[in-house]
Length: 502
Image (cartoon, rainbow, N blue to C red; front, side, top):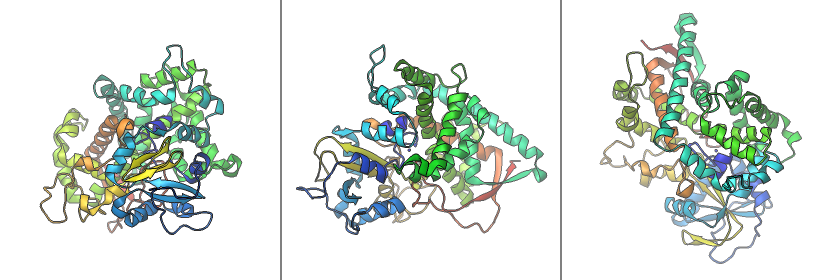
């Protein structure tokens, strides 16, 4: 729904960028050139900082909690300042102010993008420089064209249909593989960690569709390595010498090597993936760097799709009544072999399923959009000064009782279909949920992400009977202290039994 695609497109289903919590203390220290003194009408400084560190330790420990504290302290949720290792950073907290910030043109992404490509993904200085160059068709900097490129290649119509069809093809193959595994398993069932299982079931067809099957054939541990990368996020983004966190950087390098050695231009990979690599080749970017940059796109594809799918499945398991309503609504989209024959029914004519999708996006939101100001701007009645960084957290606005109701801290399946007449049970409409960013960086992959996640969750429940291993299972919630490149994971393990559905 956390990459050159993520960082420059900046939002992410969940798909694309920093719709991820990409901003870290080290990025702020490296990029921000900002003094300590307050200037006229500048956002006030959040109390509670400690000498030298300011709010850096609190931010590193639990950024979501710091954003929440800032929201409570701020008058009418106006922008506020925090101090990170002596540097002031602006938090944009109100929904209206976020929209204004997303549309603001006095910002610069290049330094943030370049820093992330080099520090987290290991792209060379040479490649970072060459991405600014023109190619033979004079298309300009790849930083400038990234959003337009992916927007045009993932737009509704023929291109989106091609992507979705490829994903459904590979998902059906994976369902067949799991079916054979269950048929051969003792008692016809397997016991799995639900988060791990969802990561594989969704990640395998998504990877095969976009990169071709050869990459996972070369390294079947790619998706597990991606989970480790998420665990290692603070280490990777610390800016410290790589030898200090060698294991974390080696893990990223091995995933890049799988693409470097496994990607085939004549594969079934989506054509625009190869087209983007061709653009890099024209700028004489090395094959290794092309693989590293392509890796960032692949990582972005998984970033929010997998957590959202987990929370949809988990919510339906934890609330059996909602599951029965959901299963009744989706039935006509499938044939007697439990294959999707009417995707439009799932996407356009299943309001309860749609509500579950948007609720899970809201509930697991953890992304932070980041911008560097190139000029003084006024947002929310405050003056934000040139060369400062501003952070736009997505989680706090998604948990406002006055918008989402008194049950805003709970996962509620029917939040976006209830009539809203019961006191405290509001229906804010899906426009109140902003998982895909906004403005000219609105996530270009949002249409595919919707098709992918909804079709996957519906298919899983049509084919498999899933139950908690422990009938007295304790409810898990999003792990908000998790510094992540993805949506928020659960704060505990969830073990389930999976059987073929009869």
